[in-house]
Length: 159
Image (cartoon, rainbow, N blue to C red; front, side, top):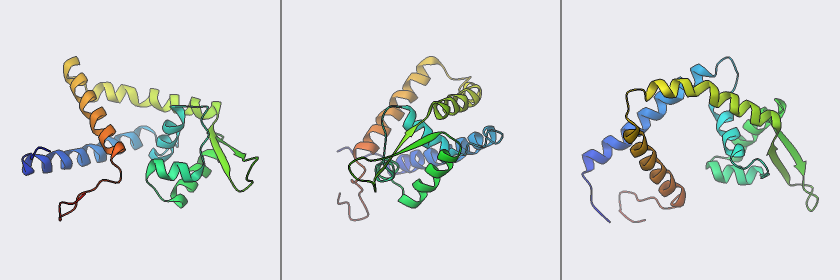
C-alpha cells in the first residue's frame, strides 16, 4: 500500500465533499418544479439500472447504507407518486418487493434530461480527455468504496 501526501489526500477528500454539496444544490435548484428531491431521484436511479429487479426495504437500506426508516420514507413517497410498485411475497407475506414502474422510469429519464444541460455547462471547458480521465478516476473510486464498505481505517491504522 502506497503512502501518499497527507495534505494532498486531505484536499482530495475535502474537494469531493465540496463538489458533492455544490452539485446537490444545483440538482435541487433544477428539480424544484418537478418535486423530485435528490433522495427520490437517487432511489429511481438505483431501480432504473435494472428495472426488472424488485428489492426489499432491507436490500435498499443495505445498498444505500442508510437506516430502514429513511429508506421506507423515500419509498413511500415514490409509491404515492406512482413511481414504484409493491408486491407482497408469496412465500412470506411480511416481505414486500418494490420495483420501478413505467411512470418511475419516465420520471427518472425526465430528471436526467433536466440536469444534462447543466452538466454540459459545468464541463463545457473540459477536453474529452479530461472527461475521460475524471470518468475513469471516479469509476475507480466508486468501485473501491463499494467493494470496501466494511473496510475503514481509524486513528489506530487497523482495518
